[in-house]
Amino acid sequence: MSEVPQALRTLAAGSIELLREAVAEYGNVCYANSLGSESMVLTDLIWTSVPEIEIFSVDTGRLYPETYDLIERVQQRYCRTLRMYYPDGARIEDWVGEHGINGFRDGLELRHECCGIRKVGPFRRAIAGRGAWVTGIRRGQSASRALAAPVEWDREYGLHKVSPLLEWSEKDIWDYIRKKRLPYNSLHDIGFPSIGCAPCTRAVQPGEDPRSGRWWWERADSRECGLHPRRKVSALAVSTAAAPKD
Ligand code: SF4
Image (cartoon, rainbow, N blue to C red; front, side, top):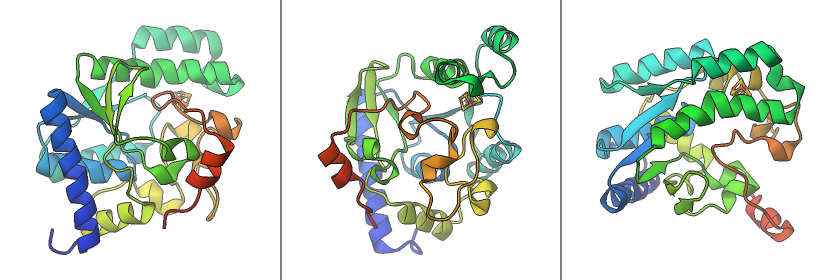
């Protein structure tokens, strides 16, 4: 990737090294591809340099059409199929029958139930029996994520969690995508910093907290999907961790 600046190549090399170490240490490693901008970088690193890591994604059934289009473009670029996991249809039928098609807007508990059925359930099936899972979280995304370690024991799911992009800034991510002309979700071009289910994601204004586009009707400290449970953050850690990285 000669067109990529040296600093980015160094970052990418460090991420690849961590991924290779994870395979050597834990054997069966998978990557939970969320189809956001970070995911495009990780997909490129994995499918070009550490292809023994299986990449999968969860189709909640409520994704944007642009996201399905992206899946197709990613598969065409790498001539590989992204393994998709789906929620349990009977559980969705029961839940929607009881709470309505958008019942997740009626309270935090219901929203967590919906995320539990549509995201966490398929995710648990996808990681069952693995030694580690890879995530695309970055320190700059939130005070909670700023405290993450590159490799952690994930108590919630009972395997190791590997985060190769922790030190990447948002600018690094987009520089890499543009330099390598990677596919990405076209919604990013109209103000979506992070993209999940259509009814729970919206565009944000320039300068707004990127996470404010997710579950915006809830309190700011509850806006996680359940795959990355929030860790407790002290006031000192918040002031340190929230400092801009770039
Ligand atoms: Fe349900 Fe919204 Fe969670 Fe998607 S993001 S699983 S629609 S609550």
